[in-house]
Image (cartoon, rainbow, N blue to C red; front, side, top):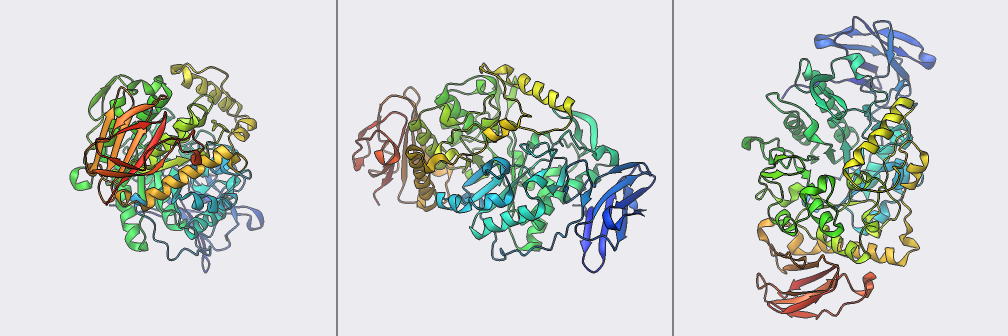
Length: 613
């Protein structure tokens, strides 16, 4: 593990600010201080093309740019704050001048995470970090133990999903910048809520992406959907790796973030001796020892490859967890009937059982959609290494009209699906508004200033939907109206049915936290049985007593089931989703049941039993 080189503007109260930038091809580099300091200071060249200088007069609030070869003026690639956006000067910040109140916070283990994914701009009307703080009591009441924030690295304009970031070290100015993010994290910890931050290390956005002016940050060795790949393994890649490793450590150390969600790691191309992800995991472990806090690295990958999770001694990269799409796809295709695009590999009932027992559905199988064999066997990887959901920003926002599940299936089915996520052995994640059936869509939106780029984005969105037979016009990503339509309404306060759905989610989350059988869910201590013809799923958790018996009817008709003899002889009713208290039509389920006894399951329902001890 190499020693990392500090980059960017580092302020020390007694000394001033040290500016460091990697520009290996430059003949000379200056830092231009703007405003009252107004001067240019030459930087000294050091080994490997790093340039550095101390400016005693540069203090927090000082705006600055780098000038390459007395000609090209650019913001700092490692800028901590871009107060006027991606094309203007960077600003010196004091990373350590914040009054943290979370000294006793040490983070939560994976198996205790109940994650709530949110987009800062649409989570509240104001769309800022500080506005999000006002909603934390609501999330705490729901039972959420972690929020996952979509990317906040500075992007062009004020509206974006965040995957177009071009200053990975700078918290978005329109959300409230570094100070706002720190306030939000500190407030989360005060509510015993962990913070997962989504970071993008596979590409940068198009507008304001000036990295190429400084050095070989990109390589032509690989093609990606976004152009040239980031240079993780070509000539001078050590310093590109340094850039992103320093970035990850900054979020964890300086912002007290608890976990990083690593976007699309299958597009991090690295054939070097030690993969970037392995090196990242090693540096994070070192930071854990220094800070006495625990951190988590959660990958997003479509490769179904346990190499991400396995320890280094087993040839893995040693990450903590990964998103698990197969479970989502298995559920979604069964309840909606959609089988187009990437859903064409799914839709068979037995895939749901396989996803519960063996995790990856494609575990060395041929995929019709990809036209190749996909995946590895994750049967013996612990369940807490996988994050599951029925909705997320991708699965909702990458639909042409951004419809949420509440627009696609019945109210009763929404409750059954909530059970499939919250009562699975995996780490559950909700998408903001899901818990009450938010009716506003979550659409794709941008606010670029380059007209050609805007046109290219519009065209690209239309192309993306060719594999689906969705009808209607693609909403204009550039329109502010598209963004406004995506904001949460929080209508459950006026809507009785939505409030009952939220209360149902709350009950399941409480059960997830308190039931001994779900304290440490274990795939090996779980019985799964599926009646594929009638879409009835039996799921029994028997890791601790009292055991939990989850019966799902995923069809739209009443179904007869017989209680399995496994793991328990006598059962008592805990809840049924069809109950009127949850806004259902009512159900007549006996309060006590015996193994082998028939039971009538209402359409689209969950019936939950626990064993008599």
